Image (cartoon, rainbow over all chains, first blue to last red; front, side):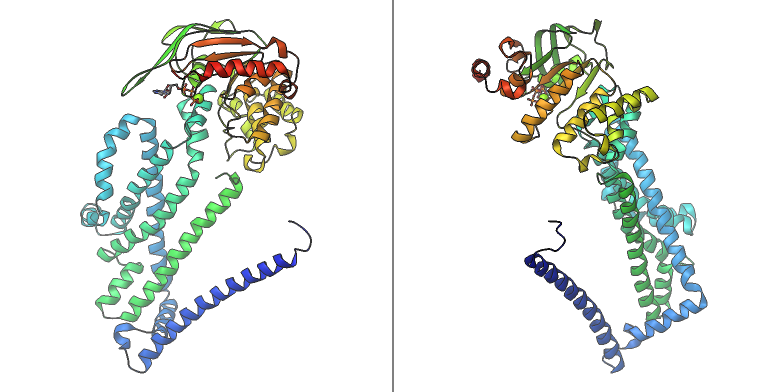
Length: 271
Length: 251
Ligand SMILES: Nc1ncnc2c1ncn2[C@@H]1O[C@H](COP(=O)(O)OP(=O)(O)OP(=O)(O)O)[C@@H](O)[C@H]1O
Ligand SMILES: [Mg+2]
């Protein structure tokens, strides 16, 4: 299979795969450009009102303005900061609670109904409570973000811990391992994939929390820009902020994937 | 080396008691390689758990190397079903898992582990991950992990059950050769009668649950033959027929 020169059939196959891939990319780009062109055109010829629907050229201008005033990076930085703090603390705290539940089956049974209720409850409903308690500022936004990712983390991680191979636990016990050792040498590393899966979910959830929070209270951030834009009827600002938000969310998700890949290389393929 | 007298064990489950072992008597001499066969779910794994001190006997006594069993002991190495190597550890770190757990990562112990890796052809894979090894090599690695703490007794719970037939033949004879070469006492649980006959000195046949020792077969006629040679003998088939008949009676 690792011959210096693959067979003609293989070459043809590889070529067709590559061609198909290129075609998909081409179509994706074409679709994007087409939609943008359509948008721009409909605005130019007066089919749609640029004041209400904005258009690519107006968004580009808004973007440049934001860049020039230096506000852009401040808003992106604020939102990203809140998101990162939110999902990291939510994941960390949730993992700690899940560890405690794994440690004490009794605690797990006691907490079970509370988790069911909290999981079903839309956490954004708690926003006003956090604002009253924490004050109308970043604190409330971060706590809300944390609340959103916390419950999912607890449930996912606890489930993962429970599904650790019983035969591996038997092996550890036969070596005379303490509960701590079983946790740190087996249960926790065995659930690194669960942790990363949860982290990926939490990145998305945290953006929901941050934007929701910024809608309610904020002086800066992408959510603030969106709400502010809509209040002053500046749809260009609203649309531009949403595009920036999408880009920031994707970049952050990619970053988590990249960290996972890096650690996988470090720990080996097994993870 | 291993002495069970009237060993009984009952699981307390939410929906009632499960009697797994009933008055099991068993004596295994130092250096002996014994097998346990029995119908599935009869209590074979429970027997190993009891000997390795993971579960306390409900009644009767268990003695290992002259001392009563109370909790896991370093005299016993346990080899579980499938290899159960930790995929995130390197081969060397897997092999020294027991040393890490018992906090005995002394230079001598590490040298011994490396010696075993070298002696059994895994040295060049020491830095690799289990996923990069073949099934047979993984099994050998699992055995070395069990031996790295230098136990006198090895308990093997259907270690080959996940392997395909071809691999199984070679791996099982490979593993048994290593165990004999290292002079260990071994107790192997298997549901494969022919595997038991080809590897052991004696075979304990257990009944359906609750397990009692139905009979003991002394494989004197096969002494000194290799596992593969054994499969070619007349005695092999005689033993097989006898054990098969005993297991075939479904009450
Ligand atoms: N923790 C437990 N609680 C209750 N019953 C159990 C428990 N563990 C095992 N049993 C029951 O005890 C009996 C013996 O179990 P054991 O695992 O020792 O059997 P086995 O001979 O090893 O089976 P197999 O051939 O499937 O490996 C089985 O009927 C099993 O259902
Ligand atoms: Mg079993």
